[in-house]
Length: 312
Image 1 (cartoon, rainbow, N blue to C red):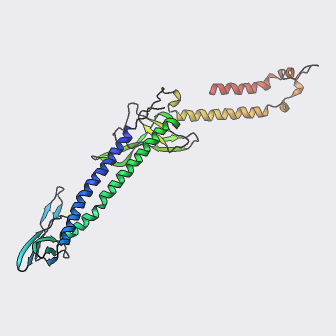
Image 2: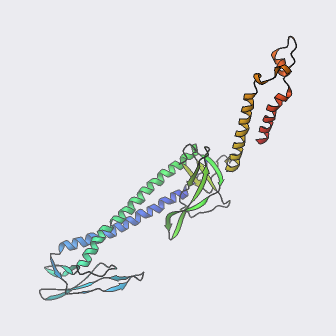
Image 3: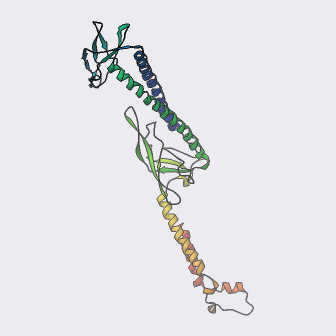
């Protein structure tokens, strides 16, 4: 069992919860504006071409020029004005000269410029819906991710003090990029894999030792967890600390030594022993004969075994 801390992962839920909240707010705002515009348009049963259009330019907070045109029109010889309720960065075109109004109350109006803007507002309500869906889907993924991490307590291997580097996640909060730790890890099979940690929503990018810890299910390498501090509840063991280059060299050396011993064992058979050099006395049993085998032929195996002990 390990003291796996998933607080940072849970903070990711707050990030995507913000997505959902903002999406709902924008959906309500855009929905009200769009629906109200459509309701008003449906209530207008008369239209007339404007006699004059004032572009009414102004600047927004980003110093971009915006237009909120004012339409002048006449109904039954009476002059009226109609202000556009929508602003945009494009002036009214020649095709946007119509004023929609109520035949019983001509002052109740809507410019064709506003009507076009309301259509775009309704289209933009799709964006908040997408934000809401993205937020909910990712929150569900995080819940599943937390369950996977907790499962590593029973089937995960702890590897401490791994070197790592940081990678951008493409996410940012208040113009601060969210990064994740990345580890190049070598599996027991010798395959090198790139393990990408969870986004650091807590903004933590380095620990006191400058290393990260890993818990990984080596039978399913896609299930792992990287954090700056992971420990065994019962106390860390010396084998928990990362020494991959040393271990690989040791494994290679042990493999070569083992191969040498096996080859020597295969060649060391009674058929390869020169029995003529072994003195045999009458009534001697086979054990006595084996004890009299020349030392030189036995020393070869003993020497290999001693080398193996030193390599270990």
